[in-house]
Image 1 (cartoon, rainbow, N blue to C red):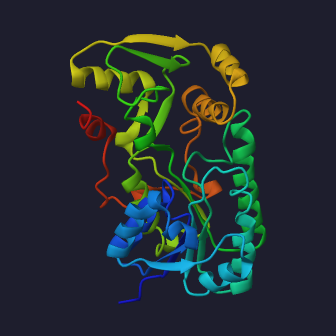
Image 2: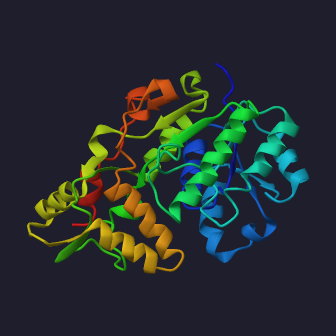
Length: 311
């Protein structure tokens, strides 16, 4: 049996990164994460660091901004997955990873930090538009440098949307009223973070995913906002008051908000009003493949199952 690829995750202690590290180790890949010394001693990261140690993860001390340490880390592995967040410069600074991959010369595949909507087909307005344009620029550099890649289009994070039904300023799902951006009839895709990570790691050894965009769009997780609310109402046996914000009002709210609230609102506008998850068909002509079709053996958590946790 072929040896499993060694995987380096950059941004492995971040929001989606920790799920990817866990999935990689669970799948039996020799799993490495790039960490700073300060991260290892950071009390807020101690729980995740301990869980990685128990999973047999190898820590490589290094830094995105230390080229030598980055090259040294990359030379020890076969595949690099970037899970860097939406920080002001981190996404753009993935150029540093590309430079290190070129110098190392041994990487079979690179995964830039995607884990959201398809940045090449987004209808987002500012400030989200600029963030997604940075991701798209990274695509073009990877392609120009002929580095083998997989882009993971994960769509919405369940842990971000479902505990509050996407409502701002609350911590539990609503039981009296909900505010909808737009008419609530736009289809969105919401996936459990564990499943996003599982599908991501499944693609690592799969030749069908080389230089492809893998969309995580399983049929059980495609809903309109109105359908989500209806599903929740059935679970709690109660009808909620529904408030619909017109697109003009949503745009006004974005304009009047400060960062990072305006970024969040502009992403929500792209998803819930413009339909960034679903306004196009996945097409092989632009390298698109769908994860649940590639891996029918993965038992993913449906939105219905996820919401049941909050009753």
